[in-house]
Figure 1 (cartoon, rainbow, N blue to C red):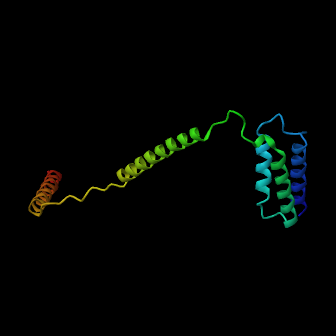
Figure 2: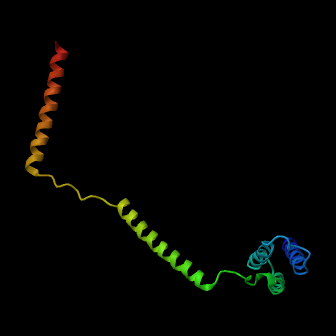
Figure 3: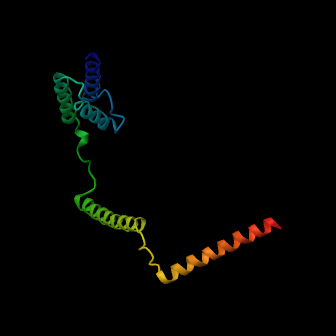
Length: 144
């Protein structure tokens, strides 16, 4: 549709301005924004095949023109990344174990108490006698 074509035209203009250096050089996140915009647009169902091809072509141009995506000098080396990854995996395992323990506590149901049948009858009988006495006492008081 015309709206979809307008989106493609606008995205193309933004990408071309970035590739030529007219836009986004002062904002270090602009390149990620334009790549994210183009990558998201190329997956949308409302674009026609020609629009999707154009968006992908522009995306490739942005990625090829953007030399700043290369790792800067002094960036984190792979040994540091591996150490951080190992630390995070150990922390994740610890959190999973804690989550399992919390779940076990939350879902714990104590076993039902076993009632001794010899006492239950006497307790029930006691309760009945107490209720009967109170009812009788009230009836007597009511007549007096």
